[in-house]
Amino acid sequence: MTLKYVESWKIFFYILISAIKSLQIVFVAYIFKRFINFAEKPQGSLLQLVFFAILGLIIFSIASIVYQCIYSNIVASVNIKLKELASNYLVKVQNKNVKIDSSFMTNDLKQVETQRVDSELTIIFNSIQFVAAIVSAIIGSWLLALIFLIASFTPALFQIIFGPMIESKSEKWELANSHYTDAVNETTAGISIVDLYDAEASIIDRLINTAKRMELALMRTNRTKGIATEITTTGAYICGMIIPFAFGIYFVVRGNITLGTFMMIAQLANNFINPIIDIFAAINDVKTTTPIWKRFQEIIAFNGGKTIDENTNVGSFNGLSLKNIGIQMNNKKIFSGVSLLVNPGEKILIEAPSGWGKSTLFNILIGNYHASEGTYSINGQDVNGNWNKIHRYFSFIQQKPFVLEDTLKYNITLGRKISNKKINEVAEMVGLSELVKEKGWNYKVAKDGLNLSGGQNQRIEIARALVAERPVLLADEATSALDKSLSEKIHQTILRDFSGTVIEIAHKTSDNERKFFNQIIKLG
Image (tube, rainbow, N blue to C red; front, side, top):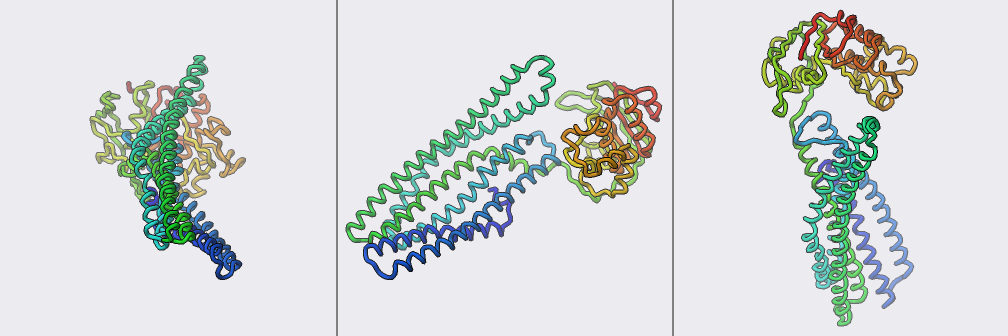
């Protein structure tokens, strides 16, 4: 149930205000009875009755406004919590068995919002409304109320029939929707290649066919749900209105109840039928999100991943050692027999061809991957695969800068609390001070850093690494996409101006840049 992710007091208040709001139908039915009785046998003041009716409806209108406010607040609270849990999993956990993507974070969670959260609140309100109506009807005539009540449960029979069908269709739609999102992402990423090989028509057909499969799956889900709702509605009206009405007229004719009482119970009976119909329709909506919800439950139930203690201090770095390290992934050997000895403050260049496994080696160094063979130690302690213990020894500069559509300052700090003095010192060191003077720290970097030059984006990447003050800086093809002059300037920053340890992996460096390194190791 999604409502477990909202504060208990909000649910209690929602139930309370729902109970008050549900009494409106009882009040209207009572006023209806009073008007009919007055028409048959005038007693008292009609003006007073009208005033009483208007005043009551105004009070219930205020209650309904409060209901709408708490309803929308609960929906927002649940949605924020769901996105918080999913975001936490997305960033901290890498579990191949339960994978989430942009489709899940946008389309799927939106389905939970519009179908499941809304439906659960609808079920609560309509259940309360049903109870209020049935209790009031029993007070008027328990026998006629019982007839209406029995008839009202007719929709349950149809729910038993259609429920599994709707759930099955929904699972197929969720899968088709995920495939469509993947196809859109793949198409977007490969536009340049598609253009190069003049394959536009084929790729468009592929995308359209994927969209058709998704839309057909959605159509079948909505069609099944719509048919179920229509059949349920028809059955409910026949069994829940026509037949009980016949009994009610019979009781009036025989003098068992007054016409006003019958009309009051008939009015209340709408709130036997309609809430039941709405409840089962809401149950159907919940079922359409069952596959997504199961996936979400798997996500939040997974307790693995990276735990982070921001107060952890890794201490000094006295060196690292790799001895005959090797790794296999998916039964495929990536590399083996790699040995490396790194002392504090050394600048080491590892040269390896493209495709050798450079990124895999870096993932072993920071603890993301566990080496299949050999030993890995830092400060003389075995740390193989221990992300939580060792990742804070390292900062990282990658070939393609990681740039967010956010301010300059946020891109460098990633939201961490770092003093302005430190940030300004690093900006000066990496050559960003002129940009900061011109634009300011709150300058908004565009998506993919398009409003900055390639060198400025790369300097943001370097500044982020330096401001972290980690003892070891890893650089993966950090300057391969830059021209020779800019590459040498950046190397000067990370190799001469940075006093810590540097391990750079590259497949191409100039002779002048190679002079900056203490060790040059060739692999592959």
